[in-house]
Image (cartoon, rainbow, N blue to C red):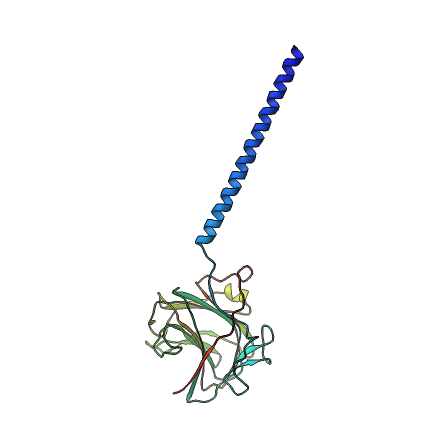
Length: 264
């Protein structure tokens, strides 16, 4: 009887242990499923930043050797081609523009830039006009000129310095434009990592108050140039936080530039 009683108690303890292990298993499984569900909900409520334009100019086929904007294989930072820009005619304004389809008031623009020795070179503009270029459209208007990167403001002192630049060298540029605050930040460095980690010039004024609360165009401008410029690996996206290119889906978008030439 004594031996039988001891065996029964042992079996009961074993049953209790099995029941406890099952409860722990189902509890862990429930916590895991709940975590996955919450993670999916959070992911859906926080969508990835939208890339508005990404061009490495490898498929750029607009223009020829006489055009202001053309693909170059001579001065290249990424891949086999860059965009070469040059126009020495004083009475002609040339634009290479792309529409930005977004309702986000903040847009970031990144690119490599290379300026040859000389005085006036390229300019870039982010604006909120209905057409690619409007002299009072608002937004950042930035020019590379005689060793200085400067921005234009119609109110007060028209030209204001941002940074110096070295000729015949590639630099990485990041511009963050806020069309609600009517201000932009400017970053520059020897690489994307250096530029994003650099101390930017902040709260720089738009050329004019924007015509809309969000950007509509990004344009590269050229006229009366004495220094040829090159742009490579152009990236435009929504928001003011740097996009993580290591994990984001960054499928190349087809090149689609609207070009305009007008006399001044």
